[in-house]
Length: 86
Image (cartoon, rainbow, N blue to C red; front, side, top):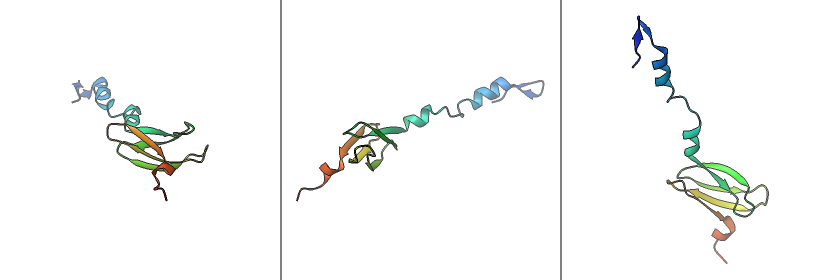
């Protein structure tokens, strides 16, 4: 709540209330994890917690399947190894 001094809101209290609302990017980065190529190590993309991604590495042309679990663990596999053998 804003504290009034002589009928005018105290700016310090207003800034202290607004400061937590202003995004510094730290919370946003906690919601994403980076996916890297398991073959060459190139950073490919960011993924949200709980998401699954299929992507091709532009450097080594490896097809990759990646998942980020709710706890922030990143799991990557070459897509070729997930295909059934004929």
